[in-house]
Length: 261
Image 1: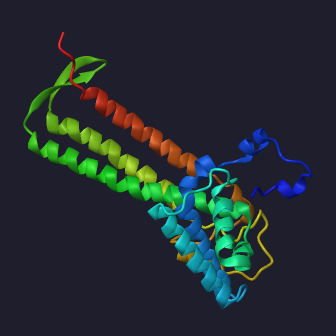
Image 2 (image 1 turned 30 degrees about the horizontal axis):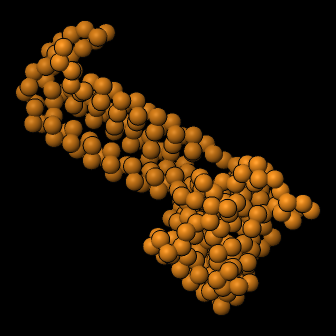
């Protein structure tokens, strides 16, 4: 099902559907989308906005969809407009009208903003330990070769003598700064946009602190307009990644053996 079909009396051109579709890209966020929806449904039930029965049906249905996707039993429909439409459609097909109540007090805008933050936050949490492992290896090599003398270079020419351990620890310093940048970006992305609605919140008596806590955020965003439109944290993350790649590129170039001439 396409979100906008109700606005048109004729079949929409394939090129238009292809332009509007984001499923090839956002399907990787299926876990974040389901996790966010489960927290939202839990809050709706706790506040009495939807019934306990509907809450249980939604949570069980979402959990089953997640398990089926991860096991390969369920495949994401490439014709779905986006991952959000696919999950909600699958849920409604499984549990009936209760599935339609999941979107109560929520807009696609704050749902997308939530999924994006959860996805990138998970990337940060995966990447930081890997960089720490690399730093440990560099420090181990620095210790092993603390007395190995080598030439240092400046302006592509040999300069003062140093030890190989000192050379290794220079890269350890670079990667330590990279971790700082990732942690800073993570801190700024770790606020929950749920409850922002399309841009001006919702009239339902929701509990934004509950959903934020359930999803591991430091708290809800303070301004609904900023909550759905802010992508500063994504630029910060991309910037941190680009600097990491510069350091890795430099490290690789310096330590690639020269071919025999």
